[in-house]
Length: 259
Image (tube, rainbow, N blue to C red; front, side, top):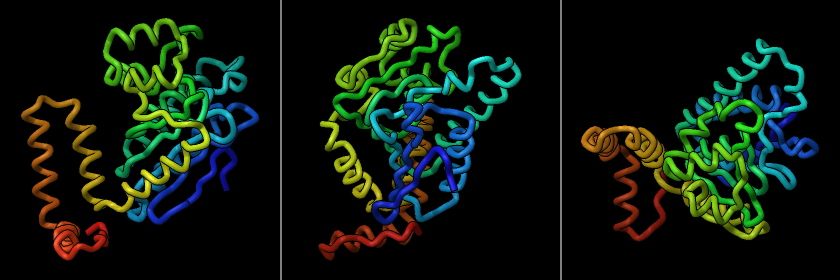
């Protein structure tokens, strides 16, 4: 039984992970950090999970770390909590299946970082994103500086991070922080339809693509192409490759089994 997140299965292979502390703008507290760490660790071991969608309950995606909980924290307690959050975000990044962010409202600080750590993100037209840590005497510590720099470039990242000012959904789209902006009432139906499309693809292929895209982005081109070829050569010997080609020629929907 979880206290701060909700998990649903709207379709085969699809999970919805909802950050659920609406009374606190879904702020990330210690309990949520523990529950997300446990969840991502568990789901990573379940072959039946093909895609997950992360969103927030109510009007917010996530307001970032719970500063009420942090008020008066000793340096030792702060460090201990942040190690938990670091482990949590790395567990999210290590999930072999794609995670899609449905940014339904404000995503600030650690909440913005959790959205950026997803494989891609869609946002409601009224959503905002920001990394205000410079105004709190710290900097982002869950990958935010690197996610923004890789998506938006150094100059835009510097402005966003140093000013700490939030940006609207249209600007987040322009910066490459989100892939698409939709009307608020269409966000979940549309992203769940996309999740179903992804879940219907060959799961070994989707997992390999996540590995190659993320890993290859940090490598020189020749090494990235070697990484791509190692996955390609592994996949063409699978039963799913045979099923995919057979289904194409027989003009039917393939039934992929992840083997």
